[in-house]
Image (cartoon, rainbow, N blue to C red; front, side, top):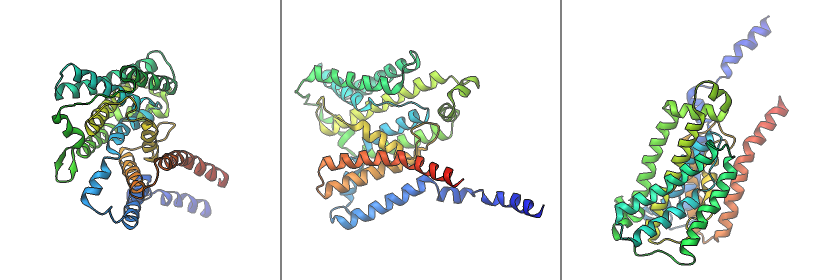
Length: 333
């Protein structure tokens, strides 16, 4: 009885306090990695520790991170969208077409964002109404959307955007703080509240863990997923506007391959690729990690193909890591 009592008394001691749980959490580890990469970049390159260099670094990840915020919610719900980069290309192409008809900056922005929203709604309709697997649908629309851009543009490019459009992708709100970065922080705060402080966010977690139970509990699963696809398309349209503004031109190859980097940011941020778990804070920190890595490698004149190899290896690693830990725990048990 004494031994049994001692064992039962030790169980509460094994429960982590909120502070200890936060310190040992995945976002805390990511924060340490961010600090470590910042120090490493400072030591490896004499050009890194400059306000303007750090500001330039934010341009390497803000557009992808803006999409990753919405993609995180979608993956937590158990779905995925691999067409986000192609949506950006199509949004930019539609902006170029609107430019030919004399549309001004407000109209161009609305066209880009609206195109993204329509593409997201199209993906959502195919998945939620027709019951098609999201990975198959979005692989198809990835080719479909970018194919439209190639049909319209071929090997040409749209140029001559108004100077007032430059602010969205090149402007600064204060000193070295870019508009893109401020917009990313605002979106991150909004998505944090949406996912972690609202009933809608709780519904997303429930759906990701068990969609059947969610449906029987009264949650409109298809409606929630449709909204998430629309949000992902909307944020892709916003990113398309920002990138078009930053490049001051439109080509059909714009943002080619970015879907891999967006998914890497989401998964590196601690979002389970199987759905049901994740946090916006982790995604934000993962975006900074991707920016520090890519910008640091760029300062060291590392070829782009090496960066692609690193991103692919990183994606495999962060997916395999929790599986490996789970297998180790099961063997020890």
